[in-house]
Length: 375
Image 1: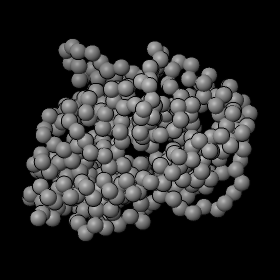
Image 2: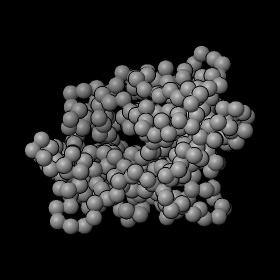
Image 3: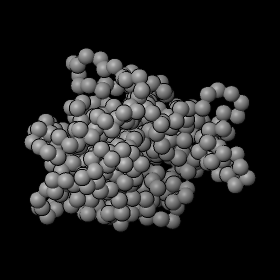
């Protein structure tokens, strides 16, 4: 029986959902008696995890040994920053986790959109859902076939083929090519969401097991709800908020931005509603953190928000992203603020589902480790 060691590539020092999920993974593996380390990606060497993650039990490794028991775990975001480890690890010991599908360098991931072939918009047993014709306005489309396709894609991301953008475009081109080459290897896949599973299945022709994460739930001071306070993620879709403000001029829309985790929890416990108008490249944490504090959510059905299995909320609270999305979302927000009774009752099952995330995580992690140990 093998005793595997895990080396989890991480952007050390960053404070986002991805690095926290990776710290949680190392912490959870170490609790089970196996060696596990965070190993820095190239541009993050010499750094440490963000201090807010110090409550996790983790160890750092500067390099990864070359042996059959060493397993490399990396995300889809920047494979080239783990080139040293990828070059030294056999395919069967590489595990790419798709945490944020649309942050991958490869175009088919960058522009990936969910539909009924990927996941279901409605609960199991419902009639098939028909996407409106005007879905996904403003979302870029993948560059078509033709000469220098990757270079053209890189130039689009870096502002065009100008003298100033020449070096960044060249680096992005190399990053895209290396990511594509990595995916041609016979590596293993995991994912944090059903949305990610759908991507791996339909675009890579492979299967990915699911290992989600679960939000922390620190105790906060109990405060009365502010009946007019609506929170949103200041890092995602901020430019859409004016479309709601013009329709709801009396509502206090406040961004979750520049706050400590404790301050975020305090705000969520005070708010009457959390709205998500950004793109969700995976199973977003803020919606689940809001549920932990009894704060309901209304969201745009973008990315993983399209998938009922990732966000099992009634369709009236998951608004299709169409050209007139705000005309549908604004009345829902108004109704919730005027009388929050119905949404709190109907989203009670979502809150219960979120409360079960830790048990699902533990079961999935145990199954993954057993798969490695027993092979």
